[in-house]
Image 1 (spheres, one colour):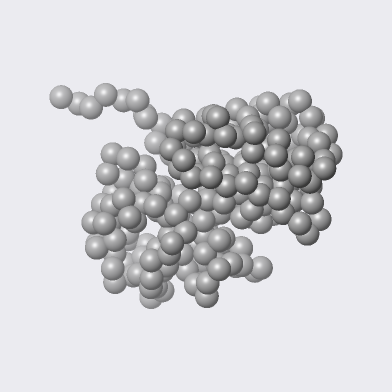
Image 2 (cartoon, rainbow, N blue to C red):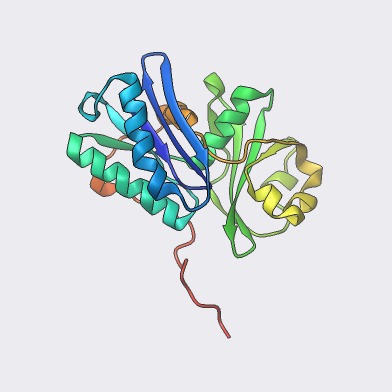
Length: 223
């Protein structure tokens, strides 16, 4: 049994797998993660009739994404893990989006873009792997509002997923030749973190390093 949580985006999402059954809570509300997260965790545990000490691990949506959101999820995951003597499995929030697209469509290639502000997106390119699990094609990175070189040099067409494509229509326009379609999957869902966690390693809670990608989040602009 594993508990998964993600607050890297507008979505606050929690899921718990007990055998073949997944208990899930998912809400998309801006700036409400601190209020929503713990009640959602308690709710899925109570519905499943289990407690933290019954779990095998906690799966953390580790970004990239909102700086504050990543800190909220990481802090909660660390607190719960320390209290119950559990390890944490950090999993990509972008991969969770790709996994939902692969599980709900016939797509073979997915380009996930999430708003990173400052006219950039967090970008991850994925192929469909075994059991519909996403296989990362390039390192997750920041991308500006121009041509994505890895896609322009590929014969594959990509389904565009994630809120970043809607936030920056110029990015979509610059890469239309590589687009197969535009997906309605905008944010990670914790149930797909549970799936992608099979590709990740469990670590000690103290070793969590959120995937901020942009380290200078509070840097003042140069005059």
